Image (cartoon, rainbow, N blue to C red):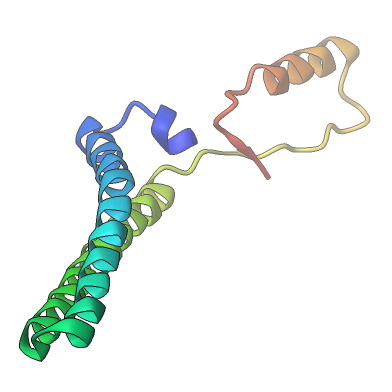
Length: 124
């Protein structure tokens, strides 16, 4: 979620959103189309031409092959973008323990500095 809130390149976020919308529409369509093709192939095997049944089976295989290829390529692309973002957008704060001989007014200043840290930063 931090990647989506980051004011980085908007193109990557639009691509992710577009791919998610396509995935949500294409998955049911591919499933229904594949089921209808296989149903038609079974009917053609029982009642009429075997050649049409083989054609429908080939169409189903091609449909699912293209769908799986698109899904894997899209997923791999977005994983690569996310890993690249994680590698280049690290925010780290190093907390150093307070020495015992620091005056109380400096201790309160150190405490305020640690409270003002950004929520995107990681404490180490």
